[in-house]
Image (cartoon, rainbow, N blue to C red; front, side):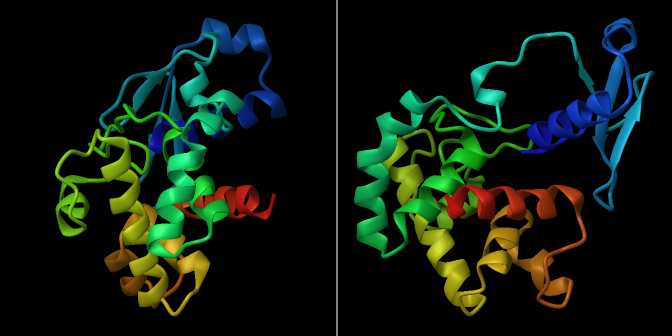
Amino acid sequence: MHRSVIQAALASSIALGASASSVQAASIYAGLSADGRLVVAEQPALGLRFFDASAPRRAANLPHAPASAATRWRPLIQQVADEVGIDVALLQAVVSQESSFNPRAVSPAGAVGLMQLMPGTARRFGVRDRFDPAQNLRGGARYLVWLLDHFNQDLDLALAAYNAGEGSVRRHGNRVPPFAETQAYVRAIQQRYAY
């Protein structure tokens, strides 16, 4: 999650002014500050990760997964959506954003699988093996349905809570928290869901 947001911001920064040669010559370290702002530096610092802007991006890091990845998981996503009573297009948009349809995806924070479940969330929704695609999808879909119910079907708040935690949404007055990552996450899923 964090890495894709940072990569997108870096790509935008490059497109807006830095020449390719200056980017390739410099070491780039980036991360998100506590308040969600992008931090970019030429020297390593606590909380910043190294990014090689000249390296080709792998499919798993692309904003949209290859069609074959989405197609592979479509029947299971449809089955789980029907089981838990959620719109299949919404579930597919979340999977696309969370893992690019990669069931082996692991985030720096320790979220795992198609729906990027953290250990506590997985336990809460009955997932024993977070790497099992069916269990992961069911647990994540149940959590998303729970969030929609909890936030009175407000999709923006449910998505923000999926990304930042329901406690974070409550602490911010039942609004999308002012974190750049979370706001970008909600926008990205809404855009995918709109298609």
